Image 1 (cartoon, rainbow, N blue to C red):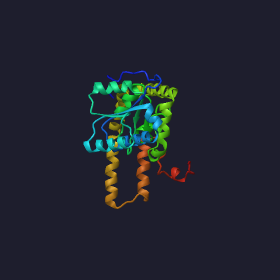
Image 2: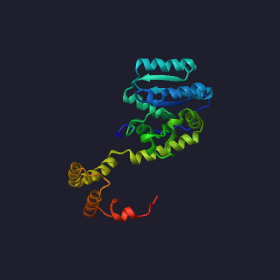
Image 3: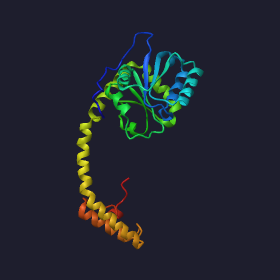
Image 4: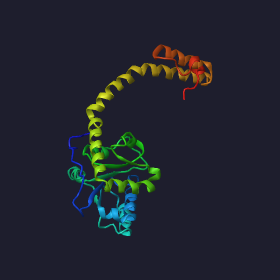
Length: 258
């Protein structure tokens, strides 16, 4: 992750009486970002709608925007919901800096990682995420997780908790920043990737040999239940690996371990 512009921002602990909290969703707006779910929660909980300004920052197709605006109008949320459309990086980062709470839901979760989550955590912001995919890798004391299967039941309570509990927002933001500074690092990524690539290259001859033997076994009509499979596995385990293979007679006769 490019952390040059992700300068930490102090998480807002409290606001003057009557001032709304800024709740932010970032990224191209499509169904899997669950913006409509947040709108439904605000529409069904007038006290939360009065407590926040919900800003959705990111590009959105015209038809999908019309659907969201219809939901906003149906629930009388015009006073607390705003769609910005696409923003340049500087303006977007300014919003993240000012946010009190970030909402980063995904369902279905299709990403192997989330740049927006990295930005928000590096900024020290409390983030509500889906309990799925890459978000599961984040410790529970760094983000507030919502089960996407139980989203309708869990999201209202999660938003109420994080919006009304200032000490919790402070703790989540602080923990998020510490975790992000340690893990969302290009240097750390490279340090772990380099030895992994070395292992892949060292194993290339072994995997190529196993592949060629597998091709021959298939041509011979051999199946995994035949003894020749166990012989090949045991031989490769003895030559190249430590410990008995899972096909060895010792492993096959051992009692189950769990």
